[in-house]
Image (cartoon, rainbow, N blue to C red):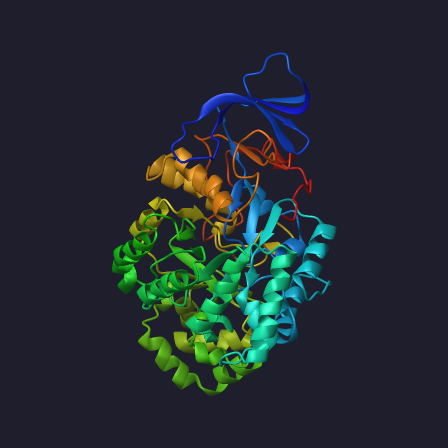
Length: 521
């Protein structure tokens, strides 16, 4: 048997189940597939890698990515492949690459310009064609965003959809599924998703179930209204029968940490007998999203220009709502701004910025958002480490970075992003397997590979198995570690020696090769 690559003597973790111990064996790769698994002697291979003492497992599947535009700007995705990620699931939180029509198209223009993306598109089919043409280093999967669909047919108005708007929205949903979208995502904290009531979500989920796709959701509230938001997801599942997936399950805000037990009990009850609801989580206790996400939802109505007008004219009313929510300004850190003038703010809390400018934190918030045209991201330190561990241990929890694919230089390396962008998967293996011991190595690998492949219907990936695609990571279990932190997120992880995507090396001997081996799945 002549083959392209023989991986010899590694400790293979198949990713098929969480209880399978590593097995020392060889893997033969031919083309883009795993040809054979076993102990081989005298095999004619073009290249042999002796990896004795290293772990060999399926390439990691990032279940929660936001790389639609960064991949089009720079498809090398070094920050992800350096972690061992070979496949991303994009289109989360109600926001996808497409459809982009009307106000949805207009709203994305600033981000596309900032990333230097000259191409424009409307449909998912058009976008995927562009991505194939430019090339990517990792495999790309996407959901379709409910927010995209709603903005495309009704803009950013806080009202129910009309009958004709629903008809067009459902047609856009159909088109996205036919183009290859694996499911529907909602972002019920962001406009315009926050304007959809439960009945509208049920209608979309019913159609999603009819196409045998998954429904994922950034829930309506992850803090004070957490329990009610989980109940809403459960209600959607009961009414439609759709398989649901909760994005980045968390308990946000100290006064809500005690709700974790009730939340888990509710999910476990509906999962009794079969898994109806799964979730993902990143291994950090700080979240990251747009700074204006802490504003009341009514301020978003009408789109960007109307929001900016309200930030100028209705500050007292907005401030009253924010103060009642108990925002702690020293726990909100600006991570990226648009202008050079305010670049010094990146990495500083709203409290510290206020001290430097001799302003109240509330005024700092309003002024920054107005000056930056709302294009401000922030990191929020508001979660519990103990709750994080409980969530990671749940048998239906997968690992998702909630980040975009970036590089260490160029247009995608701007700002001060959350360290999860460069450290998520090595962090799980270093901190929660090796140091804290809350997961076994096989459990962690399963949550990164086989489990998401099963849940999202990713065929012939996520498991080391004969005939499956050769998406493979080879790492040192004793040396693997994340190095990215909040002060310096642009730091490479250690201990990952090789990463193969579709049989081709994108990381070889610890260095990226520049090979664009990814595919649109």
